[in-house]
Amino acid sequence: MSIEVLNESGAPVDEKALAELSRHVLDGMRVHPLAELSILLVDEAAMTELHEKWMDEPGPTDVLSFPMDELRPGHMSGGADEDGETDPGLLGDVVLCPSVAERQAREAGHSTEAELELLCAHGILHLLGYDHAEPEEHKEMFGLQAGLLTSWREKRGG
Image (tube, rainbow, N blue to C red):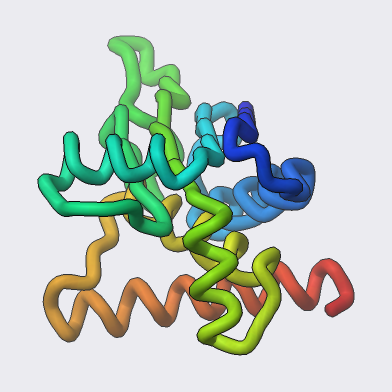
């Protein structure tokens, strides 16, 4: 699995832990082991620009997801060629804003690292086609998110 983490935010972030969490989430969702994912951490100015351009919403947000290929959980690839060989596909980009995550973490009473982990898992689930607009979707997505984060923290011993 190719997971690239780029920190352009200026904030100290454990990029290795975010890559490991991303791998855990993708493995848990049975995404092709050769799929590609990019995690980008940006400052509030860059996030504001992306949020306004792509979502037509003012100000910065915590996480944005930009899917590339139609990868879905349980479908181990982005497709297959005429010989039945699977194509791992390009999953897409998750963009995180550590300064927004830090504020949300304080309000939620947990660490910025825990908030970034939550947002990273959330963003990956969006890349996989999950949403939370409807009550049933919300329940499914947040249930998956909670389960993946719990198993991640248990795996790490905390």
